[in-house]
Amino acid sequence: MKKRFLFGAMAMILAVLSSSCNNNEMKVDITAPNYYALSEFYFDGDFKEFNKDTYNWYKSIEDKDGVYIVNTSYYSDEILQAWRDNNLYDSLPDNGFWYFRVSPSYLKQINIDVAANEIDNAKNGVRLYLIPDTLPDSEIENMKEYLKATAIKDASESDIKTSFTENLEVRIIQYTPEGKYFTFPSSQGQELETTAPIIYVCTSENMKYFENESLIATGVDNYIKFIDRETMQKHTEEPSMEKYNLKFVELSDIYVKSGKDKTVDKGIERIFH
Image 1 (cartoon, rainbow, N blue to C red):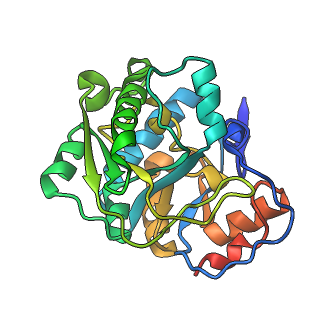
Image 2: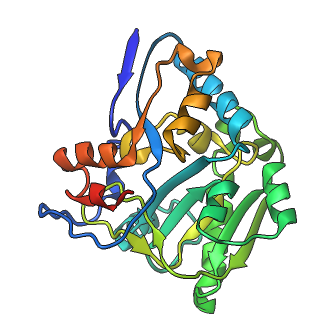
């Protein structure tokens, strides 16, 4: 069967993450890099094979210059309460929070310094989380317990085995936030910047099924990003991926389309330069 996944293919899956809607055009006064991100793919074949090929492809390029993973979610007070009501976790944070999934290379882009040995361990399969040192002491323990639980939950179910899914080692350290961080919003009404996100330092060896099967996410839910067209073309024209007809476009184009579809607020595309 032929499969076509266009802008926002994962949006329906993550619709629960939406916050309040706003049909007015967004007023923006910040800037963000206009990375190239996956908007579409088209192929005949086995979907599990596609996932594995995409994972192996990303693994082969993750340390190259200008290659990043950036994906974000906002877990609101309402979402946390729904999890409490359904007893999904023994411990949960008290308040809503931004959760960033980012590669070590993107950490450098946003000037968050992490010790080299911590990054090396993450690349070898340790699931590394960064929590802001501005988080109140009363909330730290619940956050740590939640992160450990969500990391291990269903980790063995992945079709793609990684060092993390074999060893289930989790490491949580603090970092000092400086300034504001662009949120790459994926729903209407979401703020464009945050000051203290929870960060999962994402590498090919510390992923579980949620991440390695999300590398093919398109539109505003995309994971893999390239710094410019030259870098994107260099890595997407590799023979192992040609059959999947990957189409990467600038984030500004993705947000124009998503704004028209009312997935996100209109006008966000003006941020990207």
